[in-house]
Length: 102
Image 1 (tube, rainbow, N blue to C red):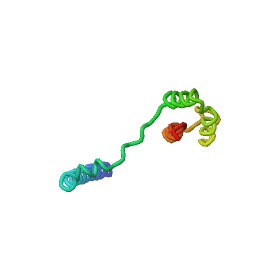
Image 2 (image 1 turned 90 degrees about the horizontal axis):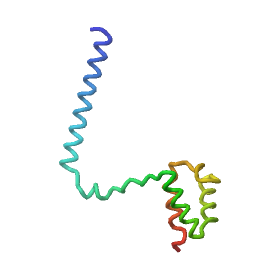
Image 3 (image 1 turned 120 degrees about the vertical axis):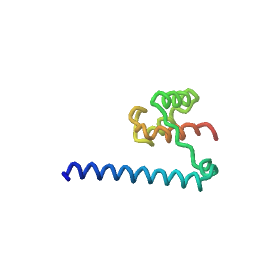
Image 4 (image 1 turned 180 degrees about the horizontal axis):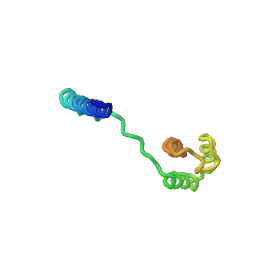
C-alpha cells in the first residue's frame, strides 16, 4: 500500500471516529441534557458596530455627559472612538449606559 493510500485510509478512519464521537455526544445530550441547563447559560454578549456605539455615545454626550465620555474613551486607551478595539465595544457601551443612572 502506498503512503498516499495509507494516509487516505487514516483520514477516513479519523472521520468515522469523529462522526461516532459526535453521535455519542448527541445521544448523551438527549439522554441526560436538560432544558433548564440551556436556560441557565448566559446569553451571548451583543456585538456592536462602530456606528451603533457612536450613536449611543452621541446621545449620552447630548445629555450632558461629554466629559465622562472622554474619560471612558481614555479608560479604553483611546482619544477617539475609532481608536477603541472593536472587541471592547460592548464593555464601553455598558459603561456609557450607566451614566446618568445614579
